[in-house]
Length: 256
Image 1 (spheres, rainbow, N blue to C red):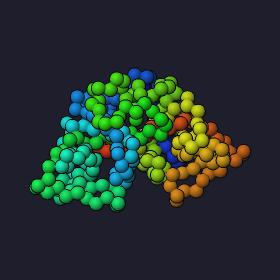
Image 2 (tube, helix red, strand yellow):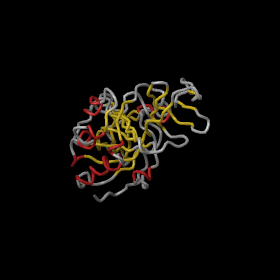
Image 3 (tube, rainbow, N blue to C red):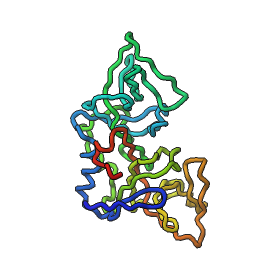
Image 4 (cartoon, rainbow, N blue to C red):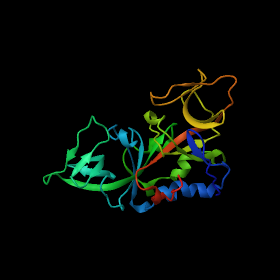
């Protein structure tokens, strides 16, 4: 499909033409996020020890066994029979959390330690979705009954992608550079994360529909009141955000 990057003053950088070619949209999600299908599995984060790198409890992890773990990678590993998601400090033989409440784990010579996979990306679902219900435990990608695309994208002709800019939505798990999947066909409800146009600025915020306000998920940013004189349109409900934990070049998204 033809995608047209739009440089905007705030919020997200989006792409025009929500009616872009459906098949090309499929390629973006499945063939670019899942590079090695036979070596890929999906899991769900079980705690908040990795919040600092944008992985929150309940997030879906796409994990690749065929990618060699390097210094600083986010990995899934087995440590003494327990499967955990941590940052791999290969040089100092440590497993680090991204939350100061959790202490590093030392990999001693007496520990049973095995790297199971690299976490290529994590998906944060901002609306209830069948993908979360599938994952009571790790599941091989090839065992999914539907593609990730088919599960996430319900209205192809109304869906577009954007990239988050800034830090105002960190506390709902949207970090700078995350890819947003936005659906114009889903009616925005109280408390939804939305992409909207406010007086010519395209922003991603929490929609306080009842109070006619746009809320950030970071206490540094104040609520924005929506006055009757403002030009305001909801441009889509954010269904999912995708956080890339490996090089963006792996996904051929150098322009994002």
